Length: 400
Image (cartoon, rainbow, N blue to C red; front, side, top):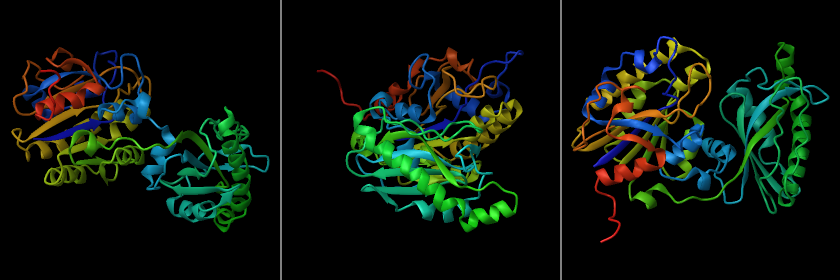
């Protein structure tokens, strides 16, 4: 038996004044079919009252305790842009940004610099060496990038080099413990070198001529130290694949040893095809689709509803081409992203498990309200893999 966990990022919501959510109001016949033929419930991806990140929630859903295994955002971003990390590497997520001669931030995204321009500027940073520390830098999508420090005597207890607001000066990076003192020193030197290299770079001279803000600094944040974790294949004796749209989920999947196929955001035909092809070769597939969460962050109710209806058509293509006697299919979210909040919340997400011999309940619709009445009741993310291992007869018996 094979397993698919399909995660609609930010799927859950809170009811509006009419008592509706985008998921409840959306026309989702395939999601409702799964609910009617499956076992339903609610899931706290980490724990009750904990507001999850997409990274920590996915770790939990895969059975990795995020309090033990979460390395911080930086290492996941670095893995997501295909930097080959080693134990002890210190990693950050970064923005290309615009500062004036006094290092006052004028634009945290450097006018949303293009990927082509960012790739040229990347070469001015990647491969530098400061006080015996190797600098690895790779741009990702537009103004975003990942920074890695590799060397001896480095710690990850440092403050951000990002003021997080425009109009403020790039802060001096401080160490929060003795082991991280060298890290802070190298970073402060690096930011000055980057400014010197980029401020008069031909790319930026041309941008200024066009009235565009120059990308003349990087702003590091989200520090973390990379450590190897037990691989998914060793832990569960399954060959696993991740089909995703973002570098963050790609990085997390690579950290736990899943193969990765990255699709363009919203390319649901490709995602459906990759799932169906993947089931020919893999025992386990993790899927993440991002657009519903982006609509939530924008506070766009109608857009989120529209996206959920598009995802339902993706699911129809997949479900109509798999056999429930051979595949357990889980539909859920990593966290709720209420329209009224425009961010993640601790509200539980609906979940359904569809497949052979599940205890079908009376739920007929897939949404936050109907699934609450299901026989799965309320679970945590950490429970899901154990449930699936049992359904697929992979669990070992505890006791005699």
